[in-house]
Image (cartoon, rainbow, N blue to C red; front, side):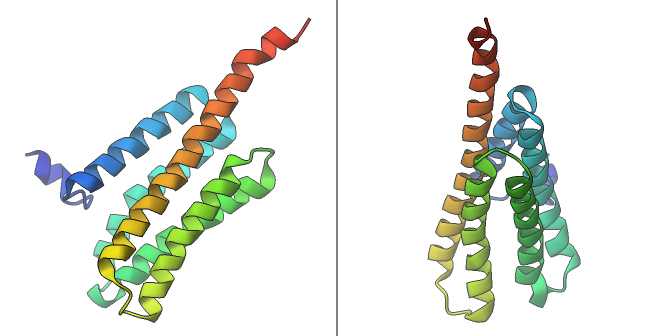
Length: 153
């Protein structure tokens, strides 16, 4: 029964399920303790997580990798917009990590001989680092908000 829900979201393996749980936990943390940029970042990341499987399902099989690349490029654009428009540093780190993951997709499209296992492992690492940058930024913002009244006379 649970597999009927998880299968369309491409959450087949424990590592995919753990990644989604981590993303949901960080998004909830950002929604509760972060400011507007953190909530926007969480929303962008959740949208990318949710839209990627549907983009892959809608694309012809030969264009699966291009569909993933398109959603990753959209997320990268959103993270860069957050980085350029606000005073926070975490969107820049998050965008940098996500750029590395996006470059992996481009490398695979250019050269199919790029080792699949290493590409997947690296993709997971960069994905976690992208979300971890959001968590760190939320923690900094939460601390700043908590300490702000103490600094005022």
